[in-house]
Length: 427
Image (cartoon, rainbow, N blue to C red):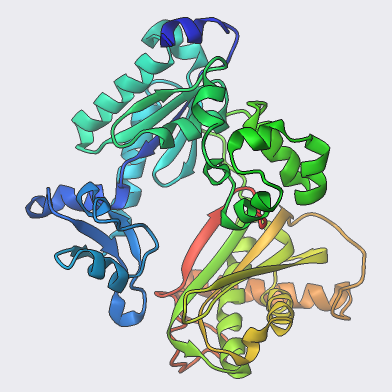
């Protein structure tokens, strides 16, 4: 189908772009490592510290079947000549800023989705720069010319289909998804290709013989809502092109919806004391960052990975929002106590504050752990005093006694941070 004709049939539609950098970490590293261009290479953490996971790979490495999140030893088995490069997050942040500045030449409605992905609403830019495909192609060429990096772009009438368009063909390509062609392009794809559908949800969908995106679209919306909660209705809307979420203005501060910290330990955790030490550090980091954002969490999520790389996620909803280390620790520990992992080896733990609200939110309900508002106020004052000490003298100036001298690798340099969008534990 001619894209000009299909795009013009809905003149009042928004034109949304989703720009996704190709192999961003690996591509950035190649800018300073021309000797690796054309060779299979991957960016990964330090295997000596048990962070041996592939973070990004070149197109040449991809041909060997190497995938993101694969362990280094698995990747090396597939490609013994694979070149490994350490990550440089300061470089990725710099180039992300440069690329988003290019996007803003075309529209002020630029909403970053991650360090290497952004949505753009170019509806009002069409008279200046052409239709959606022409704008996407201009952006791809400009980014390539000025940075040496490539991206894939999706063009559509909503954010979800624009995102799926950028995934449809890679690398360095533009895919247009319209009201006329989305059923032909997207509905035959496996259900797991639907944006926000993870492996667990795909497996559950398969139990109902829902195998493709078209199958999702053809279900009764109420049935999906019963089986998957609010995300079931959301999936129905997404599959049928009913998403109408706006793209934020570039100067609007994006409100985070989750704050998490995680670490792969230098050795496996073994027993309750190790778990308590790890959770103390992780809860402290999450609470500190929540306060820095002026937020509190109505829930806590814990991700646990064992030595065989099997991962489980559990969460707990709280009757009141919290942002103190003690309350987050207690919620996280209560979650782990309900799993077998309190007395089993643990390779990785992550703690995330979810269902966030402004810290000004008031709630007179009594604390789920037996403490009243006065106790909570004292704890918050103590934690904020620690914040002030750290601001003045550095992040390591004050900590919890349980963390000091540990041998599991719990320190500021090893704990990763993640601010997230919509929390979606089922997907």
